[in-house]
Length: 567
Image 1 (cartoon, rainbow, N blue to C red):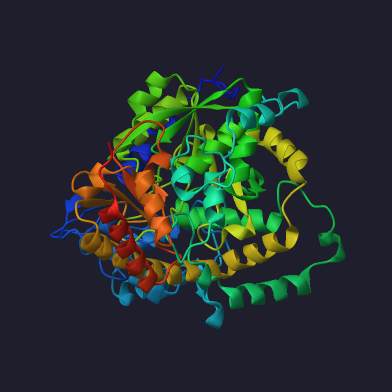
Image 2: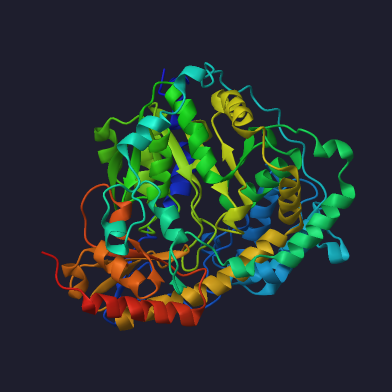
């Protein structure tokens, strides 16, 4: 038996070909390119700068990448991919296809390629035009009878005797009271630091992890909410399933199939209050199975690590390099579970490469548990889409996602998919946590997903985020000599390290404190480390206007020049 109570008999052999093909897509996405200026950019274009607006490679829809098409056969290739998706259920009857103009733009082909592909599928009776309703799937071949899934022992739900040792955690991690900036950033007790920083006043906030909240689709949300309120019955306002509204679980399945390459059933989805709650619930299940040590990326998210520690787990650092998490080091750590952000690692921005993915799948097939936090995977600018680990090994990966980085963290809506033998215990844990998420938000979000409004919003904010990222990269080059920029190809933040120049001779906590004294918030990179490393900053660009980003980086440069070298 493995760490989560499932049988170790099945191996990854049955999906070797698919796993090899899919993991190869992750190779070559982490290149570091020196810029002509004083900073260097990891993940940029050939000249070291982010590519121009509109230069995303591939489409999130079905993870299409035009580079896979043979020369002179793009239309036939697209027809084949769409037919396959209709046949295997990723595009069920009733699904609306992207507008030909949008799909052509994302694939960077002429519109005629897409319209001809749609015409051929229409002639074969699989899709049809619906006027203003778009082009929809109208027929699909009957699916083959699914084979019975292998049985595995059920994991017992969390017991009352295994409650989180919160009091012990608080006693060993005392919180600072009324800290001044210098003591605040340098405090060894980091419990609640991120929340405390949010509450401090500033003029320019470059904290990571926040999307463009000014771009929240208020009009679309209001239309969807009105439609939902007009359709709900009195019964809908009662206690629903703690697993989540069926409408949202169906919509999430469609979203994941189209955008993350994950095939799932609505019954496998559990709606949660964001990834934070997902980690708390998974922590309960892990503890119930005797897993008290969880490997984490180093550097990695301070907040995610604290969620696990609050639940009583010991977090074990595993180094991250240009290829992502070091799987050899994971094996040496002895941890039976690992939390990771493989599509866009926080904070470095690297992608877990193809060879590492294959090694990780072998580790999971031997009994390891992978917790995949699909952190801001939708926000990519200069690289092809990367498939989720869950799409390669459903029985070994617990997958967590949310709309916190896509719409707004205040919505507190996310989803969690776990291996089948853990589902009942997870639903039980969710029931006792809060009886389930609020119904109206779930139904409105489902409508946005089903109508295509969420995809439209994603395309809109990508353009805004890309422009702001470009401004930040140029500002770093101009104001932070010797700085190196990481993770520019995707995400909502940049990681900046100082290998040489004045930044290499100061503590990043001192730099963050000096920046805050000038009205600018930023995270010191050391906050997100468990082991020592070069100084740096983690800088968010999505939520600020371009002129604020430029001014904020200039003020950080001014703060850097004012600091004496660290002893």
